[in-house]
Image (cartoon, rainbow, N blue to C red):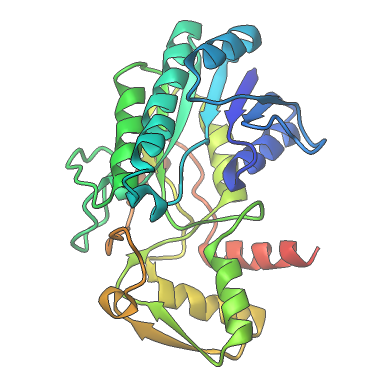
Length: 296
């Protein structure tokens, strides 16, 4: 099997490449610069350049594509000047990849988000729930990417994730470690509920998926229960030995974000088990491994 991975300069893309390498699967990555830092075989690719996508994928002829490249600055996506660029990346770029997946007969994994839903209520969102109502423009464009994939090809895995953290980029854990070390008290939102997703664990699942033909919509976060950002922060401080006090506040009291954030990011993952996929380890265990990796 030959696998093409977009966005290898990001948190998830790099870990997918590492997982493929670990299994001895031929992998070619891409990002805008084409700089794999000597770790992997990486080509330069702008996914919004349709001709470039056609030329690159026609030459590589992958059996599967893991599409990790995306615009992920949620607040930045609300800037009216940036919206055309966000759409071009998340919707049009995804359409370019999906069109080539169809032409090549390749499987495709598309990484999506709980932001495609309205973020209300307390019931976990189901993978095949089509009651979309994104609260922000980032969510709108990720939904557009989902539809680009599902309306173009049959051999797809659309995998929604939430609260992502990993070693290759900025993330909530690193932010809290820094803030906790600088302040005696830290105000953290406690009315947004979800579960973290650790990139190496997710990468393992995504590679498991492309080795099957169990296509469809899935949800994937770590196990360990639904928590608030404040709960997550308390565990981060506990494991890291930070004495800073966590002060829970409401989303309205916190009041910093430009884009609306979902209060209900609960994702039902039972479909993974139903289709024979191993669930991700607990987020507490994932956090412990991440903290250890930062020290190595």
